[in-house]
Amino acid sequence: MKIDKRIFGWMMYDFANSSFTTIIVTVVYSVYFKDIVVGKLADGTMLWSLAISLSMLLVALTAPVFGAVADYSRSKKKFLFINTYLTIIFTSLLYFVQYGDIVRGMFLFIVANFAFNSANVFYNAFLPEITNRENLGKVSGWGWAIGYAGGLLSLLISLPLVHNAVRWIFPSVALFFAVFSIFTFFWVKEIKKESQRTNYFKTAYKRIKYSYLNIRKINELKKFILSYFVYNDAIVTIISFGAIFGASEFGMSAKDLLVYFIIMQFSSMIGSLYFGNLADKIGTKKTISITLYIWLAVVIWAFICRNETEFYGVGILAGIAMGSSQSCSRTMLALLTPESKKTEFFGFYAFSGKLAAIIGPVVYGLIRYITSSHRVAILSIAVFLVAGLILISRVNEERGIKESTDWID
Image (tube, rainbow, N blue to C red; front, side, top):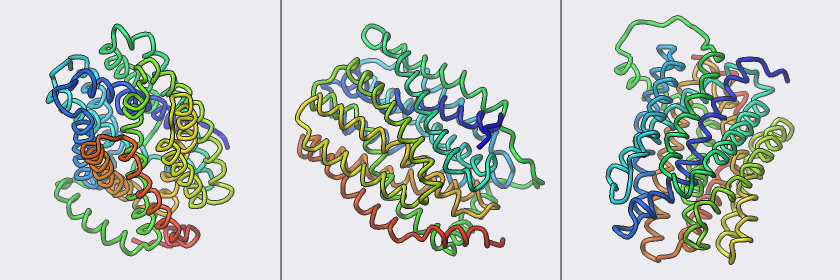
């Protein structure tokens, strides 16, 4: 497979935006918000789960609109740019969040996370435009692997700041995102098609209903989106609470957590590359199922884990599953979606994933609040994973690909 300038530019967005997922959502800001901003003023875990869920609710409500508008107006790149820089601006503003600034800390994060996930609607929709069906798994896997390299570099940059200048980590993440996303905006060209002048938002709402009716007609795509709805809930919850779990259960410091996730990034890169290639060989559905079994092992191991050293093993295994399950899910959607509906259906894909992501963090936060135990709370994730495995087992990948290629508007 030849990696040209467009493919490399597309991959570099994964490199750039992984800094936000890694540092803000997972490792540093989540723990900083719980322990420093909230402290003993309230239940920091519950408030963090609320911030995650509210941002995902906003994405769920707007993603179908964004996808339909971008598809109709041929403005994917413009919407990608706007949401990217909203993320960058509000991430940098996290510098001003200190002890007691609970409302400000939640508001700035919610906007940043909303914009970040909204940008991914348009970014993901570029995938089928930059490569052919035969290489979707490889390109998606390489994108995630390069993304974890970006996450690794952002962790290394943050390491010297974590003790005495932790708030400077947030604008440094924003700068990292801004610099490395430039490759995407220069090298990824949108395929220009004829567009009409119209009220795009009014048209978008009409197309949401139309898209829903279309997805209902594509049986295998419909079944896959339902399975993704469930198992992605588990993955988002693990990403959102992984560092908090380590800090609460094993007393890991901010520096410990950064080192922990640096090691995890290496296994994530390996997992993304290996499973991306495996998906092209044995099929995307089988590959996703394998990664979900790995996730199930991660949850069970975390529940019975008794010391920090053992928890490092949990992190390495989670890293292998993390990038691979998400990159293969992106590939699966591209395979099952008709060419003319890519952006529109990617909007619904984001809708289902983010709508699901409202439930998992809230369930985790509530169970943690009621039982005062992160270990009990993490078992709730296993329920979502088992349900996701059952649902994806009912998807016929070959039939779904045929449905997408035979689709006529």
